[in-house]
Length: 394
Image 1 (tube, helix red, strand yellow):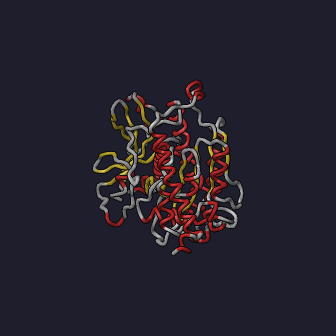
Image 2 (cartoon, helix red, strand yellow):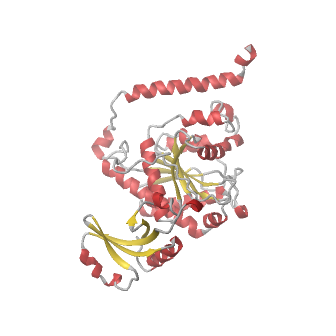
Image 3 (cartoon, helix red, strand yellow):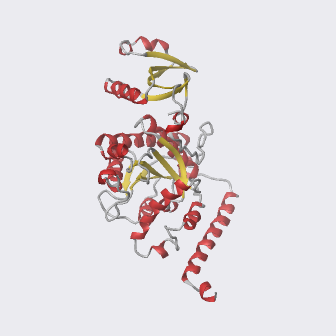
């Protein structure tokens, strides 16, 4: 027994417990003081100036290897570079940094250090998912926090296991064992100061994946990711889809799929930037009219178990407060075109369509015909619903 208490293993575990206790005490002290923005933010207004984009894995670490030999590291890098290119092109006031721009290995702690040293305003880690099931599909975006399910724990374990390729990882990560569920539970208890902002951005990402890229969203979730734990700004880890699903693997490996996913991420980033700058500080609370997801929300519905007879889809192409806009010539020859009232606004929509695939085809045709802001919307029994609700009936 004496040898056990003198062992390196026990000392390392004791360090983790002490660190956790210390952080809890410090957090309690800090929360007892009112939150204040910096003087510069009060004087000049907050501006999102720097984003760090983190393509997961790389080099000797391929990440997940999917159907047809497609590698997670290649998909993550391709989408990351496209996202950065969109930001550089359309938001030139934002500085874009990457944790890697080529196929090279970067340790997890180095990825976080890049963002911290740059005093970044947002950290986006891009990955692709994998599982034993070939039918699992959909996107999900993670923020740091407690695992709410075994599935979330498995994702965290897989992404964190990359540290096994690093030298001296036991001491560098305070004895953290990526193969141990207990180790992941410890890290999942760390709630970073930017959790609410992270959730807010993650929600926008999932909304855009559904409406822009037309992917199935599995929701916003929490898990103990090392790369998020070590950053000091709002941070998310995005899973673009499952490389172990044959259809999604083809999509993720295609130029079109990567472009749509990068475009969705860009739109989420642009919306987030506009909102926090309008509020004047990144120390804002998420809009209380927008519910924070639960599991934040666990959205693991199985498509076989749900009826779809009352589910339909439409494509919204325009919204206005002026009903007379419907007389514009560009709307006159559209099949299934009609107008819906929504408060003080009128929505111009095309549909309904009973099958999502049919609606998606019309959506793409409308975009090609000049309706670039068109997006797909689900309905149930004639009422517009969220994509999360629609997933129950598909």
